[in-house]
Amino acid sequence: MSTVVTRFAPSPTGYLHLGHAYSAMLAADVARAAKGLFLLRIEDIDQGRCRPEFVEAIFEDLAWLGLKWETPVRVQSAHFDDYAKHLARLDEMGVLYPCFCTRKDIMAEIEHAGAAPHGPDGVLYPGTCRALSSDERESRIQEGQAHALRLDMTRAAASAGPLEWVDLGAGRQTAAPERFGDVVLARKDTPTSYHLAVTVDDHLQDISLVVRGVDLFEATHIHRLLQALLGLNTPEYHHHALLTDKAGRRFAKRDRALTIRALREASHTPDAVRAMTGLGR
Ligand code: GLU
Image 1 (tube, protein in one colour):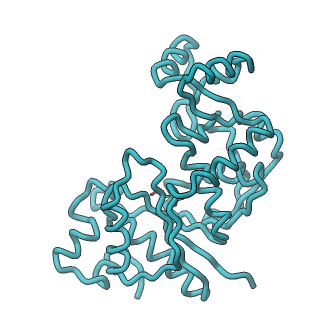
Image 2 (cartoon, rainbow, N blue to C red):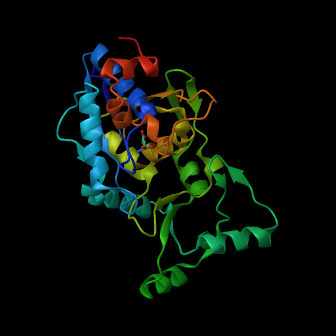
């Protein structure tokens, strides 16, 4: 039997809250029950929003909760070269293109087209830059115009063929990444994106089971496609329900009273916090 490897992969853009505690403890519990490994990964590619003090707070809060993780901890901002390598492979396959559009350009194009098809993440990119000639791409890049890199979804999905992935709760899924349109794989301001970095890292870290909130369920369709294109491992997934407050709203980093540190300062014990998440002892 191969080793079960799970991970908790927070973004240091605020203090961890009760919902994060649940996700981290669940991933750690699953690993422990299987005598496997629990990893922590810092997802800090968005250097404009991430802060070192939140990274420190993640270590401190998780340790206070009694969690132990393998070292070294992978910090995404130290691995931009890994993402660049994978982007280069996609580029060689002809499934990437530079996109020079601003948000304003995209909205104007949608208005002009008179239709705004939506995907799971909102309105779909209308494909403006997909149609640029290679000469035009080249000259705009030479001029230094800022650009993102988008996946040519139709081409990419056709080259990968039919794909499946498994969620332990929801069962076998037929991958349907097309619904997202041409997703961004490298942003104008960051040489990668969440989708690319998470897929590459789960492979490089040999994650066998991705435990994360159901808010990322749909994104897994894109991750499965990237795995197929890049020849990366496909872990199993467990997308857990999100903890909500009494009004049914999901917790967010802005809910200060429910950050792990606020709970700790209010003299709750780690066991009490665990009980609040509904996890057994
Ligand atoms: N970094 C993501 C977040 O904090 C989670 C990524 C994942 O678990 O795949 O929302």
